[in-house]
Image (tube, rainbow, N blue to C red; front, side):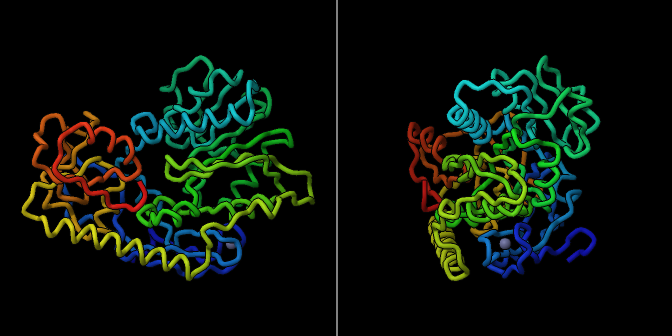
Length: 400
Ligand SMILES: [Zn+2]
């Protein structure tokens, strides 16, 4: 292990309790790096492990890999180009409308705004919109919009009064908290720029759903935090925040959406009965569910191996493909292609897999065996595949 780029995080980032090791992932590959020049055989992998806090039900990575390694290459995830993510943003906007029907906000801030897709979706709900994301550092002026302003800075360094004439009355954040190394400190600084009227609506992957659906393939180096309903409520409770509402979007990573406010000082207003503990989060249950996940991956691998003379294709050139390959113990080298409907990916490969991406319409699939490889896009992919005549379709997961 390289100690310059990897550091350990053994204490629960939510409650400070000592964590225990739940699952080991030795030599877990990096994800999200497409390549025009094929595989780099010397591309590094990193040991990883999932730690669990028995006090608050939080899970987190044990090894934090430096952002320059994780995002230094072409990290190509952009919301609008990812169908799953843009559908997730639509769901988020609908949820906001449900909780605050017809309400118009003075200023909406999107923390971790990515390409601004969600803000564009929320334009009708606010007078001013501000997107904050470090990916925009130094090129804020490239984002042109009459109502939306973009800042590529740390949120705690922005003077909202001076720059935008007030403080935000709504702060939203989608799929950002799971990347944050110190979520408690971040929440404290967010609360310090807000007042007691500011509403927060945050969405991030939910550890309860990961466990429920045996999705240990969703553990990867970029997601440092795995909040459960219980652990996020604990985080808010420890900061005296008030929960207004929460829901789970099952069709986008099993995401938890929580609406909350900064509380009056000294009163913990979290209703403990709302915490929920399904599926039960304890070491025994986590390990049992991980064992089932491994058995499932072994069955899928066995099915592929026993049909190895057939023509195999993956469907969906997911950023997460190297992690699926890791669990299936394959580098997909026996596959013809990974198929993907996005023309922008045509001809690309992966930095750490010897496969090429092709458009499905160019290929006769009547005799094909297809492995679903875009695991967080399975439902729309299945709908499309149902219209084609395909010999065999293999779903690597239990839940559809
Ligand atoms: Zn904890």
